[in-house]
Length: 324
Image (cartoon, rainbow, N blue to C red; front, side, top):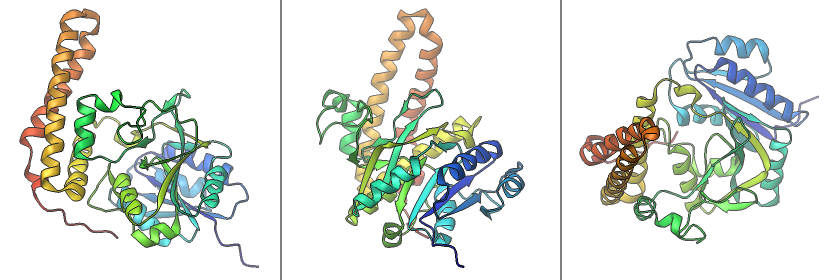
């Protein structure tokens, strides 16, 4: 007798996170229960025991070995091309679904066929809320955020953001973070996979922007809860992570708003960082107990001002968009 077609194709990308990947899979299989599903683990060239441990502990999982770190989007693209489920559950190796999370996201997707992506309520290891819904980045929004206008108009549907929203009700949002999201396979097939020019960061916002342009919507549901550590693959590499983040932001802005949009966004960030540097310098002078924290902030903000005003080589080139 043939097994039923999968409802869920769960995809976990792993890079030197063996222990976390095993914990992620433990929670994943427990929550899937008897739901028809397939689980694909994509290893991005780990040098720890990730592959052997996963194959030993979870022989039912499909393990795909890349042999090199291809990045978040490219790794997910490889798995999505092989996935056969009606829904794709993309989840980081350092994210752990809580009981009932997958069923809640599927129920939300089934209730509204216009939804391409459903994001869960994400919490930190101490149970506190982790912001997981954001507005699309635009040059205008960058100015609003750097001049604190988005906070001033936080309650406005068009001008505000989601930062003060407690993530306590279902809501249509611009995009959800890629730590965990349920994606309708039909939407993936229509718009294609992640843009592989993004090595890490901004690929999920670019993807959901393209889905919105194609007529789909993105929703958040607090009925599903997922614990997320965050940054596990980049521990000890803060400088590299910062570089990837801002390079991806450049690419996203250049792709969707052109070179003049990128210049405007960078100017907004330079102005905002300069103002914040002055304020933190005042805190350093006024409060000796805060000097260590203030010094760290001043160092980062100063680096950003220099970076946003002088580093132009990569974003000046027209991005060669490729979607696998």
